[in-house]
Image (cartoon, rainbow, N blue to C red; front, side):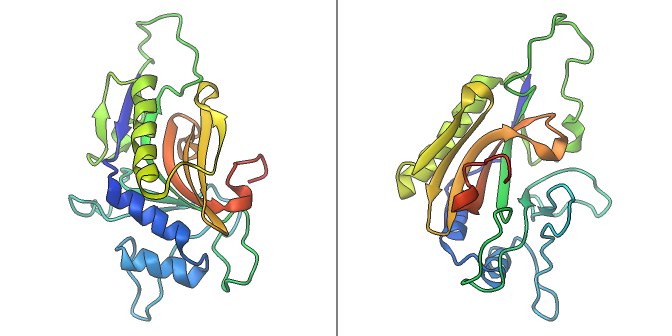
Length: 222
């Protein structure tokens, strides 16, 4: 078993709360991305955010790293946002329930619901994707579910210090999926433990997210 984390602090929590509180329009959200340095606008002032526009797996926006940018030919995963459908162009328009931004910052291997292997000396019993992640991810090679859950509660406490307890909570850690939800109007801030779609569920991850309030509970059709 092993865990790796990005060093999430109060500044990151503040950024996600600010995003959840802001108008959920494409112009407003992309402007916040630019203002926070998550993406650079082109010469025309347009931010080329790779929102999901088809049936592809969630697009990712690679973020600037504290240690500087990765080489252009690097395939390593560092700080990133997972993106859903784009926000509407106008605030009065209906928000697509698949419009979201998620920031995964903790990875656990094997996932919470994985059965213990019969052979503890199995050579395949290791994190085969370890080298796919940049040095920004802090490795904890002996950490397991208890440490993973502790990280969830640490970040939850940072949120509660700012905006109070969740409006609602769905799922349960015992089934490998849970989501704390803070409704903020049209959108909701979420803190979730769930399977990591980007690695085809090789990991469980903890993620901060912004979802439409009606879709924040993560029903099957979201």
